[in-house]
Image (cartoon, rainbow over all chains, first blue to last red; front, top):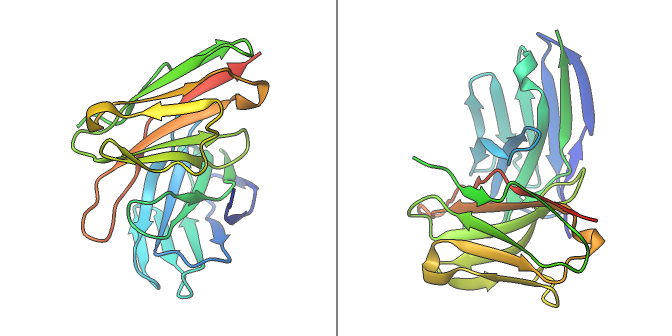
Length: 111
Length: 115
């Protein structure tokens, strides 16, 4: 099935560093979402974006909905050990339909 | 408010055996989704329900997979018979549309291992 192009695949950083990851698609989406998944758990929603150009923050997390509606990025500032996990972007073409996911970015933080 | 509940959390079966997964969505959410997540991949939709009606089952392998959502609340996903390639995490999600947006909330998933 279709999946979004998410990069990087993995990141190894020091505690306190900033992190940036992004997602691109050949298709237009009306909603972009970012989820975090811990081992053995389901994805947990971090940020939802509903308008092209929208920039939204949730604590140390900031995400933007690209103006072409074909991309999005997620930044994490001042990383801490509990940021470790797999981050997924997801696009949705219209409300109530399936999410199309990227393959995830695995984040490792060393203290 | 309780989240999406799934059971069992883990299941190990031999190939050719049947298996069933259960999902209880967030109260009031009329849309329910079943996704399958293979190792190292993002989730992919199997089937979507609006209330009790399956409105998108195009990705469900209908020769061996079936699902139901009686009374538009709980849902069951069944595989019969299971194959080795069915080993994956099966995730249930639910949402409630608010205007032109809806947010999907996921359960913890059922990790299936087929031997």
